[in-house]
Amino acid sequence: MPLDQEELEAIQSVRTGTRHVRAGEVILDHDTNGEESMTLFSGWAMRQRALESGRVQITSFLMAGSFIDADFELANGDGYSIEAITDVELCVFSTGDLKKRFGENAVLSRALATLAQSEEALLFEHMTDIGRRTAMERLAHFLLETHTRQKMLGMAGNDYCSFPLRQRHLADAMGLSLEHVNRMLKELKDKGWASIADGRLYILDFSGLSRYCDFDDSYLRPRPIF
Amino acid sequence: MPLDQEELEAIQSVRTGTRHVRAGEVILDHDTNGEESMTLFSGWAMRQRALESGRVQITSFLMAGSFIDADFELANGDGYSIEAITDVELCVFSTGDLKKRFGENAVLSRALATLAQSEEALLFEHMTDIGRRTAMERLAHFLLETHTRQKMLGMAGNDYCSFPLRQRHLADAMGLSLEHVNRMLKELKDKGWASIADGRLYILDFSGLSRYCDFDDSYLRPRPIF
DNA sequence: CGAGACATTGAACTGAATCAAAGCCTGTGG
DNA sequence: CCACAGGCTTTGATTCAGTTCAATGTCTCG
Image 1 (cartoon, rainbow over the protein chains, first blue to last red):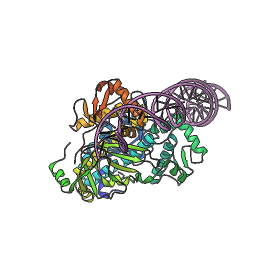
Image 2: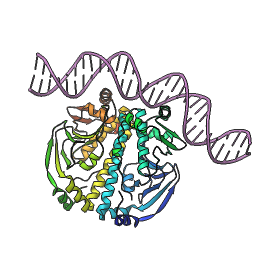
Image 3: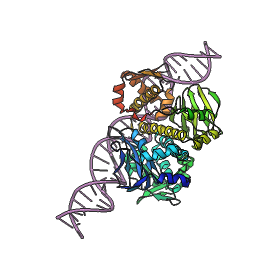
Image 4: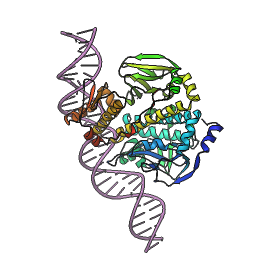
C-alpha cells in the first residue's frame, strides 16, 4: 500500500534528519516537546502506559514503518511513553510542517487515517487477548501475530522471525506476571507449538496454534508507509 | 471541534437517510455488505469481538457522534460486530461516496484521522484497565470515563449521567465475570464512591475515585463530528 | 399469575500472582 | 583467566483475586 511519488515527496520535504536511540532509552514521553514526529526505520519499540503504582501496560509494539505522531502521543497524558526495545533508527520530521502537509493533501491525510485505523484493529485483538483469553491462548495468539507482522514486513522466514522481546515485555503486554509467562512459554515449547531462543521466535505448529487460540490474520492489514 | 460549513456540506451531500435499530439488535456484522457507513445520532451501541468459544470482549462503547466506517469494521474479520445497546438512531451514508469525498478533501480526511486517533487513546486506557488494574479499579476508572464522555457530549449532570449498560456489558468490557462485577459495584456503593440505579450512574466522590484508580481525563479528547 | 430477563448472594475452586531462591549467561576488571 | 556483578530466566511453594456453580430474589410485562 505505497503512496504515490507526489505524496512521498511532500513528506520527504519536511524530513529534518534521522535519529538513533539506544535499546532501553526513551524515544518520546511527557517531557518531550512535540516538535519532532518520526517514522521507525529499524528496530523495535513499544508504547506503554505506566500507572502511579509502578504497574505497566504495554499497549503496542512498534516495528519498521510505524509512525509516531508527536501531537497525538503527547496528548495522551503523562503516564505514556514510547521506548526503544532494541537500538532504533528513526526518520525525523517537523511536526508542524508535517501537519501543514496533511492539511493540504487529502491522499496523505487518508493514509494517516488508514494508519490509525489499522492500529486500532490491532488494539481490538490485543484487548481481546487480555480480557478474554487464558494466559496460554494470549501468548499463542501474540506470537502468531508477531510472526505475521514480521512476515508482512518481509522480515521473517516461513516459520521463524527475529524476536528481541524479553519475558518482562511479554508480561507487561499480556497483563501477566513474568513468572507465569515463563511457565507458559515452557509449556508452548513442550507441546511443540512454538519456542523462543537466541532472540528468535520459532513457530513450530502454525495450524495447531491458530486453532488453539482462534487466530485469524484478517485484522492485520498492510499499512501505508511514510 | 466542529468542521467548517464546507466540509459538513460535503458529507451531508452523501447522506442517504436515517436508520433505527432496536436495543439488542445488530447494526453491522460480517454478513453486512459495506455499502452503508453511519454516524450514531442517538442511543448507545457497542463494538465487540466474539471468540469461537462464546467468550465476548467489548472493545468500545459508541455514543452520540461515533462514526461507523463500514470498510474499516468489515475488514476486522468475522468475530466482530456492532450492536445496539439501547434503541439507536443512525445517519446513513453511502460508503463509496463518502470515501470519494474523503479522497478529495484534506480537511475531511484529517478529521477522520483525528477521530481514529482519539478512539485509539480510549483503547489504550481501556487496555490498561483490563491488563493492569484490579477489578475494583477498572470499574472505578470505567465509570469515571463514561461520565466524562457523557459530560463532554453535554449529556450529563455534574455528578450523574444516563447509564443503560447491564452488568453483563460491564463484565464483557472489563474482562470480568458478571458476578464479580455485581460484587464490586456493591462495594463501590457501600464506600459511597459511585452507584448505578434506574438506568443512571451517580458519581458520588469524584476526587476520591479519581485518586483511587489513577484517572486523568486528558486522554479523552473532543472529537470532530460528522 | 407466570415467564423471562436481570440482579444478588454464597460456597467452593482455580488460574495466575506473589514471594523467595537458585541458575545462567555475558561482559568487565583485577 | 578467574571472579563477580547485573540482567535475565527458571523453579517451587504459597496465597489470593476473581471464576464458577448453584440458588434465590426481584422486577416488568404480557
